[in-house]
Length: 276
Ligand SMILES: Nc1ncnc2c1ncn2[C@@H]1O[C@H](COP(=O)(O)OP(=O)(O)O)[C@@H](O)[C@H]1O
Ligand SMILES: [Mg+2]
View 1 (spheres, rainbow, N blue to C red):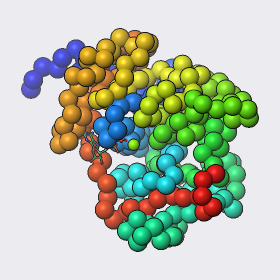
View 2 (cartoon, helix red, strand yellow):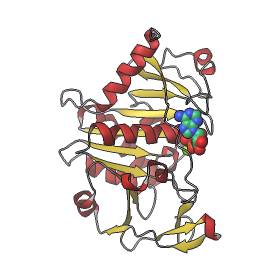
View 3 (cartoon, rainbow, N blue to C red):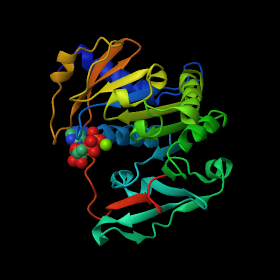
């Protein structure tokens, strides 16, 4: 077997840390960045898969983008379940049927308590609210549930954008407190964003684990240089490489699972009356 390099050993160690559960440690807030199509969503799915396998007794909440093909189908139907807020505006449309409305048979929930109660362990609960910003309130609620819980947000900028004012600004600042508390909570939150600066800086400041995929831009707070990121291998068969940085320690990993679109499920979620 070939010897592993020091960055590879560190990479595996950091990956293990993401699934270890130690009350003294608390959870992890992680940001994934990279160029379009380099696997940001896929890496989110990889972390979801790892959580399901390593910690099957935990609940997982997944935020999908609206008006785009649902990504969690790539995990396989047995690992996902759809939840929609009762009386909300959310509908599903099938790309294979010219965006005709279809029944995805989601489970409808009244409030956070009910959602939390019925969300299964060891599966990704894919949740749809009235609007994207509601995720901030839901995550605040999850802080108080008293057991390990995992949250995955595809495209954080839709939820806590860098440009916001008034009421939304107040909500984002409050939310950044919750994000800052993750290291003391039994909560893991992994999010990705195409452009890091699109996510509000009060949240970015709290990030503990940074994942740099090919095409990512280095930041001041890491020792992972732009040159190193630019040297990451892209391989659509073996999987793309990424740098992981947690608290100044960094390593390299290759995300070997390739999450390809499932041609059977070209389903999108929409708000019935257009954008909220
Ligand atoms: N680990 C991987 N390494 C390389 N390519 C991958 C990997 N996982 C998925 N892919 C391929 O790349 C495509 C884009 O991945 P995706 O996660 O949607 O990227 P992004 O969210 O960064 O735009 C996928 O449809 C898949 O075919
Ligand atoms: Mg994506």
